[in-house]
Amino acid sequence: MRPFDYRRPSDAYDAVRAIVSHPGAKYLAGGTNLVDLMREGIERPGTLVDVSGLDATITELENGNLLIGAATRNTALAEHRLVRERYPMLTRAILSGASGQIRNMATVGGNILQRTRCPYFYDAAAACNKRSPGAGCDARDGFNRIHAVLGASDACVATHPSDMCVALAALDAVVHLMGPSGYRALPLADFHNLPGERPDRETAMRPGELIHALELPALARPLPSTYRKVRDRASYAFAIVSVAAGLETADDGTVRDLRLALGGVAHKPWRACKAEACLLGREITPDRLREAAELELSDAKPLRDNGFKIELTRRTIIAVLEQLHSEARR
Ligand SMILES: Cc1cc2nc3c(=O)[nH]c(=O)nc-3n(C[C@H](O)[C@H](O)[C@H](O)COP(=O)(O)OP(=O)(O)OC[C@H]3O[C@@H](n4cnc5c(N)ncnc54)[C@H](O)[C@@H]3O)c2cc1C
Ligand code: SF4
Image (cartoon, rainbow, N blue to C red; front, side, top):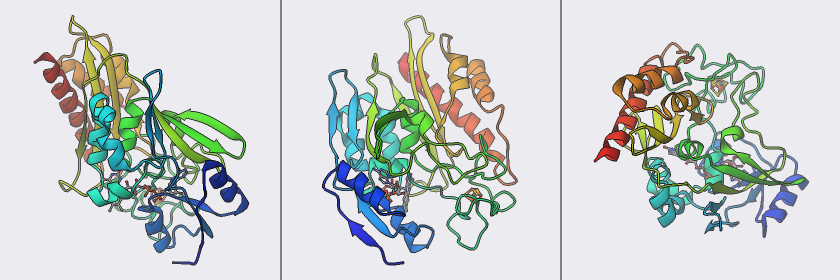
């Protein structure tokens, strides 16, 4: 690993100042992704600004929203009483990821900004437009079993690896940013970019910005929800495909609220808007579930090795919604 300078800021303002005054510096949180990338020589920051000691509180606001400091550890968020009660899909998503030790270190900010697990991205000898714009993409014609089937481009077919972010997308979470020109808030749905021509531009963040907090909107009514992750091993493996879903039916059996997001299939957590629109206000039947899942996947494009993901995603969407629907009728 190359030598680097280390800073521990006293607060968020100090952190932003430190990043701005040290070109090429990076924020360091739990280090569970960034330090691996530095060891491989993929990331080479001259300065690390350690934000792991900044805000790690979870506060219920007057309007019922939850405000979560970006330095909150993944374990603390998953185990928080209000998160377990109100947003079970989020608890399940976080607990399906990594290992207990990693979740104890990893933070909310770091999880949102973790890099793809495309093996060619981690191989300095491979051509990768995300590492070196214009270099090419060895995954396109290489071994691409884990890669994207939705929203990919000729330049990049990588997926976003986070489980937590899939639930956050379904829950309409908002990311609070603080940067050299002040505060702003962005819906998580608009935070990560699709790859397009510039897969190196992964998010809508501006230079120097810090993720300061995450906000979870209150739910109008309790929303039964879950997260299902399909992977190669029962634990300690990234999602091949995952589904975060919340379903509420009205007394007449029609769908009153539906949140559906997919993981492992695209460069960003994929909110399944087409499937949601297809089912809202209608009764759930096996044919409608199939119609909704097929509609969502109508633009899916397989690569050489990952065509199975389209059928797997279709079946997982249907299975998860069937499960929530049958639980609601008990
Ligand atoms: C073996 C292994 C298995 C894993 N399995 C899973 C899994 O199944 N599912 C899953 O979702 N994840 C998994 N992970 C990924 C893990 O969740 C991430 O490594 C972790 O969430 C990153 O958080 P961190 O706090 O350690 O971030 P760091 O590694 O410290 O930082 C990651 C990135 O975020 C930036 N950053 C961090 N905080 C901020 C901030 N507040 N503002 C701006 N930038 C910031 C850093 O500059 C860096 O670019 C796994 C990781 C490992 C090592
Ligand atoms: S899929 Fe994206 S991350 Fe992977 S090699 Fe191609 S450009 Fe790089």
